[in-house]
Image (cartoon, rainbow, N blue to C red; front, side):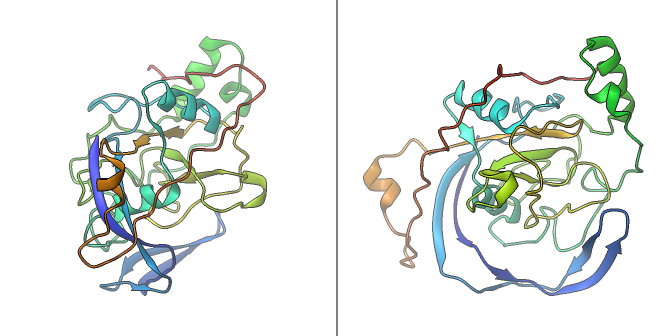
Length: 260
């Protein structure tokens, strides 16, 4: 895991220099941001640990897909970790320089695995109860790369594949209605919201899909006194609350790792 000690601003103002409206996804994408960002809310200090790679946190591995929020939280909990809070994911992505993309200020499909062409999914195959049929469809749709394969897609804190590759479940710090306490960050391998700040909150925590996975975070192994010490600049330290004590009615799944 990577240790992160940084300041975080919940509300920032960033100026986009080059934007594009995606008709198919009904979203505006920024291809390049101006230097700097203005903080429009009180800053706080965050100290935590985050996995260097998407689960299972191994270079060269293929993270499982078809996992819901509960599956991800259970897998992290089994390792003495938890899903990342939204702000932890963002801070790790922006790095100490507070960049809008892990690799800089410009959207870069060479550095990170994104902007791949759309492949129409066959949902009967994606959600098939027959492993062979499901694997065949997931493998056909899969445009991910092994964890860490894109050497340039690393943030200033040494965390890989935060934008692009696979969408990642996080703990939302706001109640956003249908998604409750869940959110999705990173944007997977397509031409979507592949930047540090955007979040998708249109899916309930039970949702699974062929490009959704997760990574884990944890509190650092420090004494309470050291963890609570304010930074030299006096910025107050944020202590994350316990993860939502939620469990789904059905069994916990380890997801699917498609094989070609």
